[in-house]
Length: 321
Length: 257
Image (cartoon, one colour):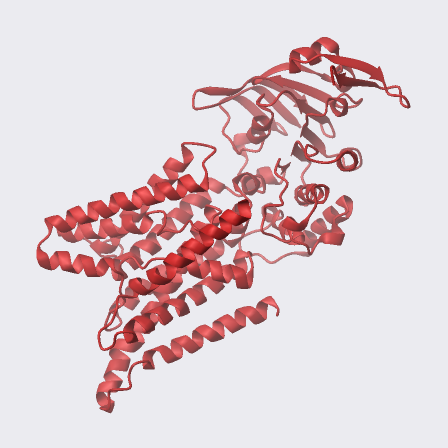
């Protein structure tokens, strides 16, 4: 099968998911008017929202994996999502209410939290030239724990209602109604995707290691800062609106790499499309699995992602042994 | 073409290079020798802008290295790193094509002269046969030629190579050295090569820079390099010298072997 065929099949799969998902779990409703209202006001925006969020998460995961030359390195494993969560939780607690360039306070808080976490992890990784992947991941875990306890601290300081809201939000969910959140997220993810697609050659060269990338003419420092900024913006916006939805950024790019190969000029569009379809699928599952109640989608992705992480870990160990 | 003046590089209070000086003209061949940890790789990385230089200057075509953008520098200097490249997740031709980066622009189409540069590089290095193979499936000699092909496709007047023959068997060592000297003589590429092969360094027509603990111990023509005192000071090792049975050229052997 050629590359184009494989990519086309992926797009078709995602279009099918996109078209069918809104209708899953509508069986019990007979009233046509209510059905239509559920579809147009809840299901359609939610499905589109899941697509955009999934695409964004997959994009950021892909960038991290290439930048750190490791499939286990993603915004979630490196503590960036926890940084974003803490930033968002802090703005809720402090009742900060500013907006900048159309972003609300929670999004800005999440953005700066993400940027802080990635600067910290990257700074630590630069302290030592012989920095191993294990140490990088452990730094990420430590950062994650650190921000998690800061979140617990903010929860402790908030009242019961706020605390419950933060807890539910931390599980990662897509229960929205109407198109407002979609319209907030779409420009951020589109802009991020545009920047990363523009940098696809640089990402390819970064896969070969910093020294080779620099000697081929990539201004690695500048490119890396731009990627940190872009992913922080994207992860920040997603976390602010849906909470930290784990492991999508790890699983999707890796699966795409197995199907498409390592060339980022193809891998980026494939991950965007497949990430969107994947999160819709997970969200549909989360909706119907204990219907009429629904699970936060983050529970599903993490249940899938945990074993996937272990599989990757065992596999990379076996390869290096 | 290349001017290195009083170059010093340090990392976290540790001096990696101190007061290095040399000059190369177009078509020169410099071999950098010295014991492990002498700063040979550091010198190449400083010349490529991979690590920042502390004091002193590196100038290409009379311009300080800081005046070049990374892209401009990559049109002037190419690099064959120490790694074999077999850990890279790319097919051979794909990897060589990526080295055209400095001649391309974001989202620009692949041009006929890009393809020409890649084809030329593969022909000269004799790597066309395995253009579709994955890097991970190549032998040591093959992957080294691919790494040189990738650097060559950058079409630079200067090429830096970090121990290009270290992990190769004798046949492939000869093959790679013949290839490099062809690039130097026929294409006029200025070569800076880090090497542990003292008999290769001590050839006529090459310049040798001997580094010890970041300092320059000796700089001179290849034929003067195979000197008892110099080699002993450089490697803390006795050497004996014999004439090559056919060419008569002096060969140094570590003693006891």
